[in-house]
Image (cartoon, rainbow, N blue to C red):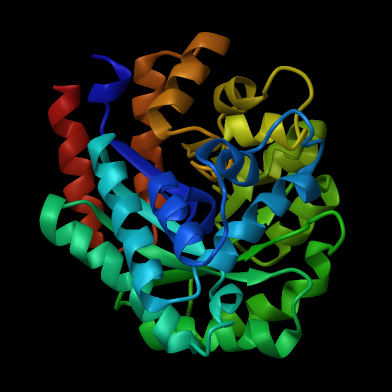
Length: 329
């Protein structure tokens, strides 16, 4: 079996960080921005000048500027899910911050419905299953983040599956946003939290204090055995994105994915941002196989372990289990 043959579950992927290059080129022309393709790639993709997460996040400026219409949001969602299906992704949760797309007189309903429609169209055409995660943003006003939780509640079970906390982790500590997750719990909305990427072990401790069962990145847990043990004992899944961890310099030496896996940490392998990081899930798998002693069977196990943690019902989870049972026979 090759990487291409593995049915994949992707749980950490940002919509605006994965905009199709050809779509972006067309839209910049329509909006009067005269980028060449080469110039556009420099705007959308990281390069050697990116030294940390804050530099990395600057690559979202142009995509957010472009994604200010219902049509473009729907197309971006549709093209992303279709691309994932071609890479043999059978289930994906795609996240984005709806408050970043309100500059052209759209409201939160417009934005969220558009992204759901794109996903549903891809599902109807190629069968890929998935859901949309709405990201709360570090640095945003509390009332704006609360509004995202409310809109998540409105569309929960109708395409939206959870909320998330994203943004400049080192500048805006996780502990400052714990009240948001109390409110999400009150509204019975599942959640995941970016932590332990740009910020260290305290960020992970704060995330665990919410009772979350998923953490975006979380790789800095390798620095503290006690917290790693708690992660394992509490059965918390890490959504690990190797390439972007190198690019943000969250990791400066060998990536700890193999050690975490061998220690018993539950892991989902994702890509974070396909366009920003110039990666896709098959390339990410190949990179892991090249740089570690993990094998195809280990990558399959990561996918099988991920099923319990997806924000979906038992019917979807059972469908996914059936897929892996067939390839394990």
